[in-house]
Image (cartoon, rainbow, N blue to C red):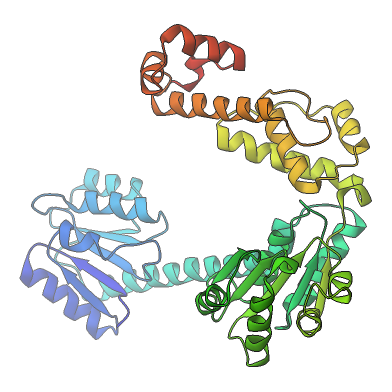
Length: 408
């Protein structure tokens, strides 16, 4: 039975009377005699309301109100007291209580307040459900960035493909985001609750394929660079698709898969079985106007992860970014944004970072993480990394990190 009203009172006779009144009013009631008994019934998705006495041994009704507010500020809590204490009522209402009633409660008044609280709770949960559905339904807008015509066409194509349950072949140059597009198709089609399994095709044997498809049942299996799938596994996948796989299969490739099958390196029957719906991801050099949008997104992401302020993106920098060909596509742009966030050179440098630059990025991240753990205490951070204080401070200076910025 769905919990709709949680009644909390340490006096057994009182809570049973309250429960009986609400049961007669066609409410589903759960009774609890203390904060400890009640707290485990309260969660963000709790679909009812709480009616609680204030004065109870141990943690009181105000503690329960605080707990409920911590779980969900929109969860209605109705507080009861036998003293008619005005300051107590003010404290309860200012603390977020939905209502405040004196004991013994008038049955009609109690029922009326509870019903209003239930209606309010129902409205909150329905609004959340609709918002979640809207966000899930617009995963293409949330996760596939860009204002160009090509970006709009990509989102439209992804939405159209998601409405079917057919197999999908995603083609895009290395770093284009094949896996991200596959995830969006999954979210638009099956939803966030259904399983989404992704795995590089290289080295996957038939047994591993079977295990993956079983875990993805009712959802989506994404195979990255499907042309790398071993020959025996290609046959196994074809058989499963012909027999009804139990999950949607999306395959990604950055190679010319038609040429691969024409030259006998990819099973022709499997190629035609997978190539039911196709999504092509345009390279960044085809849509340079999307580069600033993507760069700012990756920059904000990198700064948030490293707890760093966002550096200014000047018009001059934007111009240089857009002038690049970006053969590594979104992945290369993401790396450039991370380097820029870390203060490690010019963001518009072409190509992938060298080993020295990558090591510097890793070292800077480790230093920042140590300072965060030690709340800006440089001595503790140096000790945790087993570094002499002078060496630690030299590294901070080299990376432009100020320990005091991580305090408090």
